Image 1 (cartoon, rainbow, N blue to C red):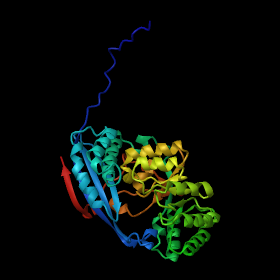
Image 2: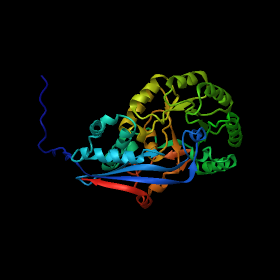
Image 3: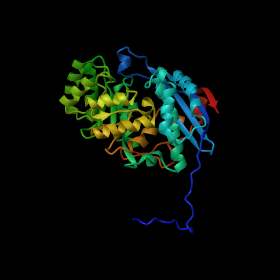
Image 4: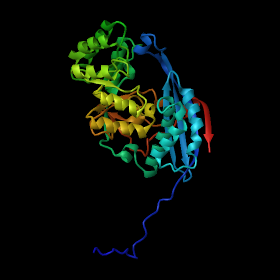
Length: 389
Protein backbone atom coordinates (compact mmCIF):
# COMPACT_ATOMS: atom_id res chain seq x y z
CA UNK A 1 0.00 0.00 0.00
CA UNK A 2 1.44 3.37 -1.01
CA UNK A 3 1.57 5.74 1.96
CA UNK A 4 -0.47 8.90 1.61
CA UNK A 5 1.65 12.03 1.23
CA UNK A 6 0.99 14.90 3.62
CA UNK A 7 1.42 18.54 2.70
CA UNK A 8 4.10 20.38 4.66
CA UNK A 9 2.23 22.96 6.80
CA UNK A 10 5.17 25.33 6.37
CA UNK A 11 4.72 25.42 2.58
CA UNK A 12 2.65 28.26 1.17
CA UNK A 13 -0.54 27.42 -0.68
CA UNK A 14 -0.26 27.46 -4.48
CA UNK A 15 -1.30 30.65 -6.22
CA UNK A 16 -4.86 30.61 -7.48
CA UNK A 17 -5.52 32.45 -10.72
CA UNK A 18 -8.63 34.55 -10.36
CA UNK A 19 -11.13 34.18 -13.21
CA UNK A 20 -11.38 37.08 -15.62
CA UNK A 21 -14.20 38.23 -17.87
CA UNK A 22 -14.58 40.26 -21.04
CA UNK A 23 -15.89 43.70 -20.17
CA UNK A 24 -15.77 45.86 -23.32
CA UNK A 25 -15.25 45.36 -27.04
CA UNK A 26 -14.54 48.19 -29.45
CA UNK A 27 -15.05 47.44 -33.15
CA UNK A 28 -13.70 49.70 -35.88
CA UNK A 29 -14.14 49.67 -39.65
CA UNK A 30 -11.00 51.16 -41.21
CA UNK A 31 -10.18 51.67 -44.89
CA UNK A 32 -6.51 51.84 -45.87
CA UNK A 33 -6.00 53.67 -49.20
CA UNK A 34 -3.37 52.33 -51.59
CA UNK A 35 -1.00 54.83 -53.18
CA UNK A 36 -1.45 53.24 -56.63
CA UNK A 37 -4.35 51.10 -57.94
CA UNK A 38 -3.13 47.50 -57.86
CA UNK A 39 -3.70 44.94 -60.62
CA UNK A 40 -3.00 41.23 -60.86
CA UNK A 41 -4.17 38.65 -63.40
CA UNK A 42 -7.79 38.85 -62.19
CA UNK A 43 -7.91 42.45 -63.38
CA UNK A 44 -6.35 41.65 -66.77
CA UNK A 45 -8.93 38.91 -67.37
CA UNK A 46 -11.75 41.32 -66.51
CA UNK A 47 -12.90 39.52 -63.37
CA UNK A 48 -12.03 42.31 -60.97
CA UNK A 49 -11.28 46.01 -60.96
CA UNK A 50 -7.95 47.41 -59.76
CA UNK A 51 -7.71 47.48 -55.98
CA UNK A 52 -7.63 50.98 -54.49
CA UNK A 53 -8.14 50.29 -50.75
CA UNK A 54 -8.27 47.52 -48.16
CA UNK A 55 -11.00 47.31 -45.52
CA UNK A 56 -9.96 46.33 -41.99
CA UNK A 57 -12.04 45.21 -39.06
CA UNK A 58 -10.32 45.92 -35.73
CA UNK A 59 -11.43 44.41 -32.42
CA UNK A 60 -10.05 45.87 -29.19
CA UNK A 61 -11.06 43.76 -26.20
CA UNK A 62 -10.69 44.75 -22.56
CA UNK A 63 -11.17 42.46 -19.56
CA UNK A 64 -12.37 43.20 -16.06
CA UNK A 65 -8.81 42.77 -14.79
CA UNK A 66 -7.55 45.41 -17.21
CA UNK A 67 -5.99 43.13 -19.82
CA UNK A 68 -6.23 44.21 -23.44
CA UNK A 69 -6.05 42.51 -26.81
CA UNK A 70 -5.96 43.78 -30.40
CA UNK A 71 -7.21 41.73 -33.34
CA UNK A 72 -8.11 42.33 -36.94
CA UNK A 73 -9.54 40.89 -40.09
CA UNK A 74 -9.59 42.38 -43.58
CA UNK A 75 -11.21 42.29 -46.98
CA UNK A 76 -10.01 43.36 -50.40
CA UNK A 77 -12.39 45.10 -52.84
CA UNK A 78 -15.67 44.02 -51.19
CA UNK A 79 -16.97 42.66 -47.90
CA UNK A 80 -15.44 45.02 -45.36
CA UNK A 81 -18.73 46.67 -44.27
CA UNK A 82 -20.34 43.23 -44.10
CA UNK A 83 -17.64 41.96 -41.75
CA UNK A 84 -18.17 44.96 -39.49
CA UNK A 85 -21.95 44.48 -39.34
CA UNK A 86 -21.66 40.74 -38.64
CA UNK A 87 -19.07 41.35 -35.92
CA UNK A 88 -21.30 43.95 -34.31
CA UNK A 89 -24.21 41.48 -34.21
CA UNK A 90 -22.29 38.64 -32.56
CA UNK A 91 -19.98 40.64 -30.26
CA UNK A 92 -22.45 40.71 -27.32
CA UNK A 93 -22.04 36.93 -27.03
CA UNK A 94 -18.54 37.54 -25.63
CA UNK A 95 -19.46 39.99 -22.87
CA UNK A 96 -18.95 38.42 -19.43
CA UNK A 97 -17.04 35.43 -20.81
CA UNK A 98 -13.58 34.33 -19.64
CA UNK A 99 -11.18 35.62 -22.34
CA UNK A 100 -8.86 32.66 -21.78
CA UNK A 101 -11.43 30.16 -23.13
CA UNK A 102 -10.48 30.98 -26.70
CA UNK A 103 -11.46 27.72 -28.42
CA UNK A 104 -14.85 27.61 -26.70
CA UNK A 105 -15.52 31.25 -27.55
CA UNK A 106 -14.64 30.64 -31.22
CA UNK A 107 -17.28 27.90 -31.30
CA UNK A 108 -19.78 30.15 -29.54
CA UNK A 109 -19.29 32.92 -32.08
CA UNK A 110 -19.46 30.64 -35.11
CA UNK A 111 -22.74 29.14 -33.89
CA UNK A 112 -24.11 32.60 -33.13
CA UNK A 113 -23.95 33.31 -36.88
CA UNK A 114 -24.24 29.77 -38.23
CA UNK A 115 -27.31 30.52 -40.34
CA UNK A 116 -25.08 32.48 -42.74
CA UNK A 117 -22.43 29.77 -42.81
CA UNK A 118 -19.34 28.54 -41.00
CA UNK A 119 -16.84 29.88 -43.51
CA UNK A 120 -16.35 33.02 -45.56
CA UNK A 121 -17.46 36.43 -44.33
CA UNK A 122 -19.03 35.15 -41.10
CA UNK A 123 -15.87 33.47 -39.81
CA UNK A 124 -13.64 36.22 -41.19
CA UNK A 125 -15.49 38.56 -38.83
CA UNK A 126 -14.78 36.14 -35.98
CA UNK A 127 -11.06 36.31 -36.82
CA UNK A 128 -10.79 39.81 -35.37
CA UNK A 129 -12.11 38.58 -31.99
CA UNK A 130 -10.01 35.42 -32.05
CA UNK A 131 -6.77 37.27 -32.80
CA UNK A 132 -7.54 39.81 -30.08
CA UNK A 133 -8.08 37.06 -27.50
CA UNK A 134 -4.79 35.36 -28.41
CA UNK A 135 -3.05 38.75 -28.27
CA UNK A 136 -4.54 39.37 -24.80
CA UNK A 137 -3.49 35.94 -23.56
CA UNK A 138 0.09 36.40 -24.74
CA UNK A 139 0.27 39.91 -23.26
CA UNK A 140 -1.06 38.60 -19.97
CA UNK A 141 1.70 35.99 -19.97
CA UNK A 142 4.29 38.62 -20.90
CA UNK A 143 5.26 36.60 -24.00
CA UNK A 144 5.34 37.19 -27.75
CA UNK A 145 2.50 35.30 -29.43
CA UNK A 146 4.92 32.85 -31.05
CA UNK A 147 6.45 31.99 -27.65
CA UNK A 148 3.03 31.48 -26.08
CA UNK A 149 2.07 28.98 -28.79
CA UNK A 150 5.51 27.33 -28.86
CA UNK A 151 8.10 28.83 -31.20
CA UNK A 152 10.49 26.81 -33.35
CA UNK A 153 12.59 29.81 -34.37
CA UNK A 154 13.12 33.52 -33.78
CA UNK A 155 13.14 34.53 -37.46
CA UNK A 156 11.46 33.40 -40.68
CA UNK A 157 12.50 33.55 -44.34
CA UNK A 158 10.65 36.36 -46.10
CA UNK A 159 9.89 37.24 -49.72
CA UNK A 160 8.43 40.39 -51.23
CA UNK A 161 5.24 40.48 -53.32
CA UNK A 162 4.20 44.14 -53.35
CA UNK A 163 6.86 45.19 -55.88
CA UNK A 164 5.90 42.69 -58.59
CA UNK A 165 2.26 43.32 -59.50
CA UNK A 166 1.18 43.42 -63.14
CA UNK A 167 0.32 47.12 -63.17
CA UNK A 168 4.01 47.83 -62.56
CA UNK A 169 6.21 48.23 -65.69
CA UNK A 170 9.05 45.74 -65.94
CA UNK A 171 11.80 48.34 -65.52
CA UNK A 172 10.16 49.54 -62.28
CA UNK A 173 9.82 45.93 -61.09
CA UNK A 174 13.59 45.61 -61.40
CA UNK A 175 14.04 48.78 -59.34
CA UNK A 176 11.64 47.39 -56.73
CA UNK A 177 13.57 44.12 -56.63
CA UNK A 178 16.83 45.93 -55.93
CA UNK A 179 15.15 47.94 -53.16
CA UNK A 180 13.80 44.75 -51.56
CA UNK A 181 17.18 43.10 -51.61
CA UNK A 182 18.77 46.17 -50.04
CA UNK A 183 16.24 45.86 -47.18
CA UNK A 184 17.47 42.33 -46.58
CA UNK A 185 14.44 40.52 -48.03
CA UNK A 186 15.31 36.98 -49.05
CA UNK A 187 12.99 36.22 -51.98
CA UNK A 188 10.94 37.84 -54.75
CA UNK A 189 7.46 36.88 -56.01
CA UNK A 190 6.24 38.14 -59.37
CA UNK A 191 2.67 38.21 -60.65
CA UNK A 192 1.96 36.36 -63.90
CA UNK A 193 -1.21 35.20 -65.66
CA UNK A 194 -1.37 37.81 -68.42
CA UNK A 195 -3.57 36.98 -71.43
CA UNK A 196 -0.38 36.83 -73.52
CA UNK A 197 1.67 33.97 -72.06
CA UNK A 198 4.73 35.12 -73.98
CA UNK A 199 4.66 38.37 -71.98
CA UNK A 200 4.81 36.34 -68.76
CA UNK A 201 7.78 34.35 -69.99
CA UNK A 202 9.64 37.46 -71.10
CA UNK A 203 8.98 39.07 -67.73
CA UNK A 204 10.29 36.10 -65.74
CA UNK A 205 13.26 35.54 -68.05
CA UNK A 206 14.37 39.16 -67.57
CA UNK A 207 13.88 39.00 -63.80
CA UNK A 208 15.73 35.69 -63.42
CA UNK A 209 18.71 37.09 -65.30
CA UNK A 210 18.58 40.21 -63.12
CA UNK A 211 18.49 38.19 -59.90
CA UNK A 212 20.91 35.46 -60.90
CA UNK A 213 20.23 31.74 -60.76
CA UNK A 214 20.51 31.26 -57.00
CA UNK A 215 18.20 33.97 -55.61
CA UNK A 216 14.76 32.60 -54.55
CA UNK A 217 12.07 33.53 -57.09
CA UNK A 218 8.35 32.68 -57.04
CA UNK A 219 5.48 33.41 -59.47
CA UNK A 220 1.73 33.80 -58.85
CA UNK A 221 -0.98 33.40 -61.52
CA UNK A 222 -3.89 34.27 -59.18
CA UNK A 223 -6.10 31.39 -60.43
CA UNK A 224 -6.34 32.69 -63.99
CA UNK A 225 -5.11 29.72 -66.06
CA UNK A 226 -7.23 26.83 -67.27
CA UNK A 227 -5.77 23.33 -67.06
CA UNK A 228 -4.13 23.24 -70.54
CA UNK A 229 -2.57 26.68 -70.06
CA UNK A 230 -1.35 25.77 -66.59
CA UNK A 231 0.30 22.63 -67.99
CA UNK A 232 2.10 24.62 -70.68
CA UNK A 233 3.19 27.39 -68.33
CA UNK A 234 4.42 25.05 -65.60
CA UNK A 235 6.49 23.25 -68.22
CA UNK A 236 7.84 26.53 -69.60
CA UNK A 237 8.81 27.74 -66.10
CA UNK A 238 10.69 24.55 -65.19
CA UNK A 239 14.14 25.86 -66.30
CA UNK A 240 13.93 28.93 -64.05
CA UNK A 241 14.37 27.08 -60.76
CA UNK A 242 11.36 28.70 -59.10
CA UNK A 243 10.62 28.15 -55.42
CA UNK A 244 6.99 27.66 -56.40
CA UNK A 245 4.23 28.45 -58.90
CA UNK A 246 1.26 29.86 -56.99
CA UNK A 247 -2.43 29.45 -57.81
CA UNK A 248 -2.04 28.20 -61.38
CA UNK A 249 -5.69 27.07 -61.29
CA UNK A 250 -8.95 27.97 -59.58
CA UNK A 251 -8.42 27.58 -55.84
CA UNK A 252 -11.09 24.87 -55.58
CA UNK A 253 -9.63 22.72 -58.37
CA UNK A 254 -7.84 20.44 -55.94
CA UNK A 255 -7.60 17.63 -58.49
CA UNK A 256 -6.01 19.90 -61.10
CA UNK A 257 -3.48 21.28 -58.63
CA UNK A 258 -2.63 17.73 -57.54
CA UNK A 259 -1.92 16.73 -61.16
CA UNK A 260 0.47 19.67 -61.57
CA UNK A 261 2.19 18.97 -58.26
CA UNK A 262 2.70 15.35 -59.30
CA UNK A 263 3.91 16.08 -62.83
CA UNK A 264 6.38 18.94 -62.45
CA UNK A 265 9.54 19.45 -60.42
CA UNK A 266 8.61 23.05 -59.57
CA UNK A 267 6.50 23.02 -56.38
CA UNK A 268 2.90 24.21 -56.44
CA UNK A 269 1.52 26.67 -53.87
CA UNK A 270 -2.12 27.48 -53.14
CA UNK A 271 -4.64 27.95 -50.34
CA UNK A 272 -4.83 31.70 -49.72
CA UNK A 273 -8.44 31.94 -50.96
CA UNK A 274 -9.73 29.03 -48.88
CA UNK A 275 -11.85 30.12 -45.93
CA UNK A 276 -12.10 27.16 -43.57
CA UNK A 277 -10.20 24.27 -42.05
CA UNK A 278 -12.43 21.87 -44.00
CA UNK A 279 -11.41 23.38 -47.35
CA UNK A 280 -7.73 23.15 -46.45
CA UNK A 281 -8.25 19.55 -45.33
CA UNK A 282 -9.66 18.70 -48.78
CA UNK A 283 -6.74 20.42 -50.51
CA UNK A 284 -4.24 18.49 -48.39
CA UNK A 285 -6.12 15.21 -48.82
CA UNK A 286 -5.86 15.62 -52.60
CA UNK A 287 -2.12 16.38 -52.26
CA UNK A 288 -2.97 19.48 -54.30
CA UNK A 289 -0.06 21.60 -53.11
CA UNK A 290 3.54 21.50 -51.95
CA UNK A 291 3.30 24.86 -50.14
CA UNK A 292 0.09 25.63 -48.26
CA UNK A 293 -0.76 29.38 -48.24
CA UNK A 294 -3.24 29.71 -45.35
CA UNK A 295 -4.46 33.16 -44.33
CA UNK A 296 -5.39 33.43 -40.62
CA UNK A 297 -7.99 36.23 -41.01
CA UNK A 298 -9.61 34.44 -43.96
CA UNK A 299 -10.00 31.11 -42.15
CA UNK A 300 -11.38 32.66 -38.96
CA UNK A 301 -8.33 33.51 -36.89
CA UNK A 302 -5.47 31.86 -35.06
CA UNK A 303 -7.55 29.02 -33.59
CA UNK A 304 -8.47 27.43 -36.95
CA UNK A 305 -5.10 28.43 -38.46
CA UNK A 306 -3.28 26.23 -35.94
CA UNK A 307 -5.48 23.30 -36.97
CA UNK A 308 -4.42 23.83 -40.59
CA UNK A 309 -0.76 23.88 -39.54
CA UNK A 310 -1.26 20.53 -37.84
CA UNK A 311 -2.82 19.03 -40.99
CA UNK A 312 -0.03 20.39 -43.18
CA UNK A 313 2.65 19.10 -40.84
CA UNK A 314 1.14 15.61 -40.74
CA UNK A 315 1.15 15.60 -44.55
CA UNK A 316 4.80 16.70 -44.70
CA UNK A 317 4.00 19.95 -46.51
CA UNK A 318 5.64 23.37 -46.40
CA UNK A 319 3.76 26.55 -45.51
CA UNK A 320 3.92 30.16 -46.67
CA UNK A 321 1.07 32.16 -45.10
CA UNK A 322 -0.65 34.75 -47.27
CA UNK A 323 -0.43 38.51 -46.59
CA UNK A 324 -0.54 40.17 -43.10
CA UNK A 325 3.09 39.58 -42.16
CA UNK A 326 2.58 41.32 -38.80
CA UNK A 327 0.52 38.33 -37.62
CA UNK A 328 1.89 35.54 -39.79
CA UNK A 329 5.51 36.00 -38.72
CA UNK A 330 4.41 34.72 -35.28
CA UNK A 331 2.39 31.82 -36.68
CA UNK A 332 5.02 30.75 -39.20
CA UNK A 333 7.62 30.71 -36.42
CA UNK A 334 5.82 27.83 -34.70
CA UNK A 335 5.82 25.51 -37.74
CA UNK A 336 8.30 22.59 -37.55
CA UNK A 337 9.50 22.95 -41.16
CA UNK A 338 11.24 26.10 -42.38
CA UNK A 339 8.46 28.38 -43.71
CA UNK A 340 8.26 31.59 -45.74
CA UNK A 341 6.42 34.80 -44.81
CA UNK A 342 5.09 37.23 -47.41
CA UNK A 343 6.39 40.80 -47.17
CA UNK A 344 3.90 43.61 -47.85
CA UNK A 345 4.71 47.07 -46.54
CA UNK A 346 1.11 48.19 -47.22
CA UNK A 347 -0.11 47.68 -43.63
CA UNK A 348 2.74 49.54 -41.92
CA UNK A 349 0.82 52.87 -41.56
CA UNK A 350 -1.79 51.10 -39.42
CA UNK A 351 0.65 50.37 -36.59
CA UNK A 352 3.16 52.25 -34.49
CA UNK A 353 5.67 49.38 -34.65
CA UNK A 354 7.76 48.01 -37.54
CA UNK A 355 9.10 44.54 -38.25
CA UNK A 356 12.83 44.05 -38.60
CA UNK A 357 14.36 42.25 -41.59
CA UNK A 358 17.91 41.00 -41.71
CA UNK A 359 19.84 38.65 -44.01
CA UNK A 360 16.77 37.40 -45.85
CA UNK A 361 14.74 36.79 -42.70
CA UNK A 362 11.98 38.55 -40.81
CA UNK A 363 12.63 38.72 -37.07
CA UNK A 364 9.80 37.68 -34.76
CA UNK A 365 8.99 40.63 -32.45
CA UNK A 366 10.02 40.16 -28.81
CA UNK A 367 7.23 42.42 -27.51
CA UNK A 368 4.33 40.74 -25.66
CA UNK A 369 1.42 39.53 -27.78
CA UNK A 370 1.44 40.54 -31.42
CA UNK A 371 3.61 43.48 -30.41
CA UNK A 372 1.30 45.89 -32.22
CA UNK A 373 -0.64 49.04 -31.38
CA UNK A 374 -2.92 51.03 -33.67
CA UNK A 375 -1.53 54.28 -35.04
CA UNK A 376 -3.24 57.66 -35.14
CA UNK A 377 -3.43 57.17 -38.91
CA UNK A 378 -5.50 54.01 -38.44
CA UNK A 379 -7.88 56.01 -36.25
CA UNK A 380 -8.09 58.72 -38.91
CA UNK A 381 -8.99 56.16 -41.60
CA UNK A 382 -11.78 54.69 -39.44
CA UNK A 383 -15.23 55.22 -40.95
CA UNK A 384 -17.39 53.48 -38.37
CA UNK A 385 -16.96 52.22 -34.83
CA UNK A 386 -19.01 50.85 -31.95
CA UNK A 387 -18.36 49.87 -28.36
CA UNK A 388 -20.11 46.89 -26.77
CA UNK A 389 -20.08 46.68 -22.98
